[in-house]
Length: 330
Image (cartoon, rainbow, N blue to C red; front, side, top):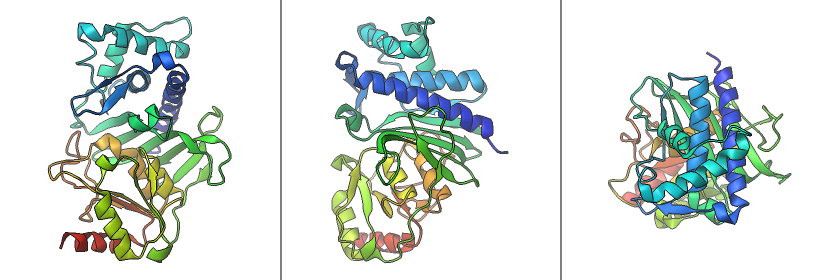
């Protein structure tokens, strides 16, 4: 199956969400946010992005569940009514005369409450890297289609990332299909559908490699990452980025290695944080595993319960990274 229609719908939905997010950033009055139970921030843009993508997916593929990051429990409380109205206002430019109501918005967001137990479903991170979004740094909108536990199509929008390595404009869109490669094009060019093919770098000498990690220290064990880099002889400073932009960096050769090393023993990664990015790297010729070298298992629901941490690489250095990682645990 080619998944041509799925990818076309996904690209259009993610582009619409990117426009909404840009509109929110350009309007300080719309930058309302709240704090979730895990103390991470969530904004009008997070909810609006999820709402419009879920609506587009429900229209095109009504039988497909969506497993998305955000929920509506807090929004449905009376004291959050103003936030629901702000989300509806943020979405209005995408609908013309057909203005969405707060009730519409809540229903669309709630469409993302899937469990991940269906044979086929989408997984969505409406804004990956909300902290980056809030400080006008890197963030991503990540959407992937999963069938029988395998990611088969993926779209990743990085509104603040240069289109190419040469820095020709800002705003990159990445798309991939299983077995058909990954490509990048300009996010804001509505006619651009299939741009340059992505290819990981061919660095085989660790001393020439560069790794990337989260800009937020709480997301990954940066001390352990520094020790791994030292064992590999890597001297270049890490490329620190918010969101799945790190996967894009590896997929197009900006970096050779991406490490996400758990800071808590019981923490498990969420599927929406990795499905789209993982596929980009693999379809660009790289490799993604957990810190034990196991393939990521998307059959466990909303979390990667069978995995621990993430190692993404261009390929040639992967086993050496895993060995260096094992040495840091000895």
